[in-house]
Amino acid sequence: MSTENKAPASLNDFASGKLQALEAKNQRRTLVNTSRTQDMALSVNGGPRLISFTDNDYLGLSTHPDVVAAAQEASARYGAGTGASRLVTGNCPLYAELEATIARIKGTEDAVVFGSGYMANVGIIPTLIGPKDLIIADELVHTCIHAGITLSRATCHFFRHNDVEYVKELLRGHRHDYERVLIVVDGIYSMDGDLAPLLELGRLAKVFDAWLMNDDAHALGTVGGGRGSAHALGAEGYVPLQMGTLSKGAGSYGGYLAASKPVIDLMKTRARSFIYTTGLPPAALGASIKALDLIENDKALTERPLKLAKQFAAALGLPEPQSPIVPLVIGAETAALDASAQLAEKGYKVIAFRPPTVPEGTSRLRFSFSASHKDEDVEGLIMACKALGYGA
Image (tube, rainbow, N blue to C red; front, side, top):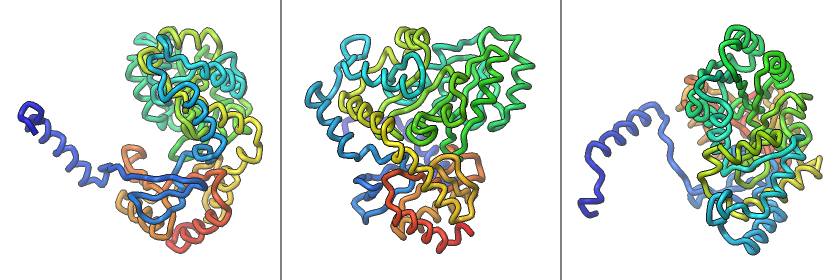
């Protein structure tokens, strides 16, 4: 390596020190090569075949033949990339169909697609809320919501998880001091699998003239007949800002906001993470359109993940899940890592989630269920967990 391209010693020392500190807490992350195939099967670093119960591919659509064919057809017609941002020349004709479909599924006037769920949240929140405004957020909202809050420079109060009375107290105490107030929650919380109390929060928001936003990343295709958390909870009309992703239940890539037409038009004009990024590859758009068609029209497909999650939880004596996500809290990072490794030896891939993704002392195995899981694989997982001492 030439001298001019060599990193400064102080930079390397800083990075190495941080890594050593993370290593000491069993919180260092590493990448592994993962080859995925149908029926939630995968191979890690060329190793033996494992059945994944850790994906967010809740309907198995990322490997569905019709979805893959739609992606290939879109690439053949429109190319591998869009070449520019959507406001320049990157607004592929497939966007119009995709956004109309999202709006129809979510029951809103319009929708807009962003580059990813993360980019959606860091664009939506600062576009609507500024330094003189207030954000009230659940303490367990996703990290990308925290990033959007920071960029907004608004005052933010976090409330105890799913505690509606706490939200009411905050609104009573602070609403009069701010022009605009945003209440933001996850529709389904990714580490616990529970749903936000959207109907109760929506009613509160109407009383105090606040705006309720839910991050439905894990709810599209999995609850509410596939339409998401607002529909699962009878909160249609109470959640004016429905954000989500196309990378989980839809098996493709991208993020979105479903809302009124004025709000969507504002996003296209002012949301920086929309304006200043290249449009999605046509393959992702084509895949998403086909995936949403399946979500709208195949009821058995969207019901199966939750059915399997309930079957698993009942067999292990765990609380009945509200979503396809079933957490098994273990505690220490090392114990969770050991449990993950033991399940891998039995042929099942289940990731151990550790701080800072989850609070200290709550490292866990997070089981997620897909419509493409075979019945015998779920039964095998149950037997493996019982053999390791997990469950009743």
